[in-house]
Picture 1 (tube, rainbow, N blue to C red):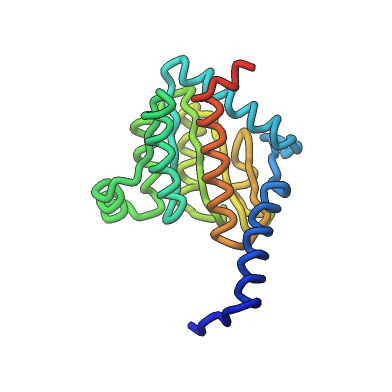
Picture 2 (picture 1 turned 45 degrees about the horizontal axis):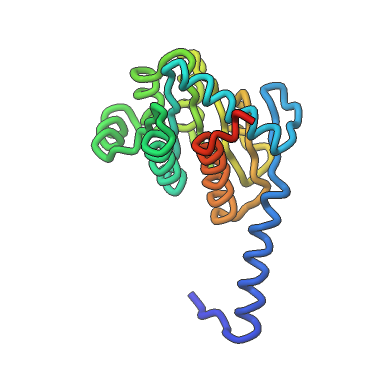
Length: 202
């Protein structure tokens, strides 16, 4: 890997990166199950109200993701539980992942626990930068069969298969892992922070 030239070139690269990151939030796209566009604020409000409504009925919020998205899933499950007072889980335990991938195949590592632990009315939040991960897509289908409300967070190509699998689909139009993951984390944080602050009550 070549060193990046310092000085003005480095400053410009940093400024461009951060400017691009800020702009990505203005380009976020949300659509419903019928692929009808939804305004960003309206979409987040709808998601906040759904989670408040369902967790108020003792339903769970379930997060799934791979790699960096797994870190987001784990982080948010803890925040929604500890700070938000909601029942929230993810399936990133190393023993669970290695057991299921060894016995069934990695494509089943979310499908199997969702089949076992998901209940009707739970909110499943599926996070994938590429929107192409087979285990995420299988997890979404398992969630549907269990009667979950499905929310997808994806990025990269606009025709990625995850983007039209949810009741609500949040899409980040960028090919940068950093931009997509940061945007996904910010969306999840926005939801739980609004709930903690009671903003959903108007």
